[in-house]
Amino acid sequence: MARLLNVSALSADHLTRPLVCHASPFQAAGLERVTKRRLLLACLLLSGVIYFLRGRKGAVLNTPALTPLPESEEGALSSEDERDEDSPVLLNMTSWSAPVVWGDSAVSEWRRREFSNTAFRVGLAVFVVGRYSQYLPHFIASAEHYFMRGDAVIYYILTDNLRNVPTLQLGSGRRMRALQVTEMPQWDRLSRVRMSLLASAIKEQIQREVEYVFCMDVDQEFVNPVGTEILGELVATLHPEYYGMPLYTYPYEKAEVSLAFVEEGEGDFYYTSELYGGLCSEVYALTRACSQFILQDSEASFHALQYEESYLNRYLINRRPTCVLSPEYSWWDSPRSPEVPVQRIVSLGRECASLEPQKRAARRC
Ligand code: UDP
Image (cartoon, rainbow, N blue to C red; front, side, top):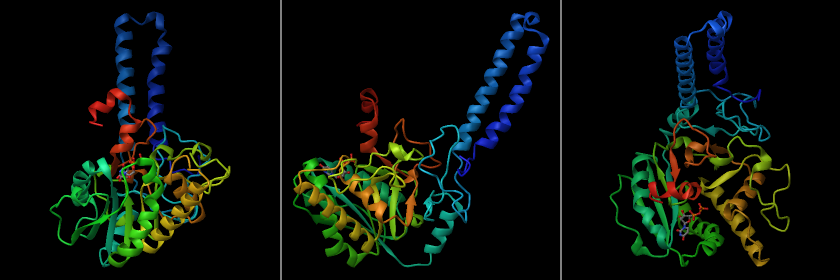
């Protein structure tokens, strides 16, 4: 754990020592001489100290990562390190020197400043097929509020039904384009063709209109600002449930027959398919390669365990992302998700899938 940026270890240790010192006089006096009242008082005092320590830990966890990028690999998290729940880790650089983005870090502030003098346009592409149209108005409303606020954005809605795309009030410099796709709303079918449809959309339209494109699932919402700190050549997002977990736990494709196959010991991180992006040329190359892997596997009647996510992860091992988004940008309430300084994008669909049945109703899943 020496290479990890452990922000809580110092404070927790510092706070524990006085607790031990306070406990010893009770022992020295001899428990037999302690009256019931004193014992009760001691318990109350002890619970107070424990309560204080817990609050302190929470405060540390909620502190944004304001550490500068290390010059070497000091901040890099080896996938072989176990996630230590008691010591929050804010990884800020990968072993290949790509930044890991936390929105409130000094590096992100610097990146936002850098982009403030540059003209650029960003595309945000989502599929809205069948019943997923119910998510669209809220997705766009939250993006209008938090996504690249004040910048030029085009929403690309890839849909089987143009009538499902409502006319929404958008901010200045922001537009929406509905692109017809001829897909039937069948989840397994759609999961095989999404990458190929995206590749075609980028080639035929998106690359002519924007420099950067991000692909997202529509069953998500923006809950805090997401700005130019996420722009990069090839951008991938850490899957929250595998953040800081050892490499052997990642659900990479294990079947050797598949083009998504990842050999034991290979790989860096496990990325989510909920959000990825970058320069149009890079995202086109990614979607085209993945769609070819998927097509070839389908011809051999094989489809990877995690659908597109498996192919995406395979691709990102060969072509490592130049910018890695922290789980702030893809978070959902799951016992396996880490606490993050700020939740920025929340996946409603994955959250529902990870909740117990009784909690699902409360979240209107
Ligand atoms: N999707 C869609 N219609 C469907 C299934 C999926 O439009 O019938 C789109 C939608 O944008 C959704 C994305 O594909 O957010 C990913 O699907 P889903 O959320 O079911 O996949 P998961 O994230 O659970 O793997």
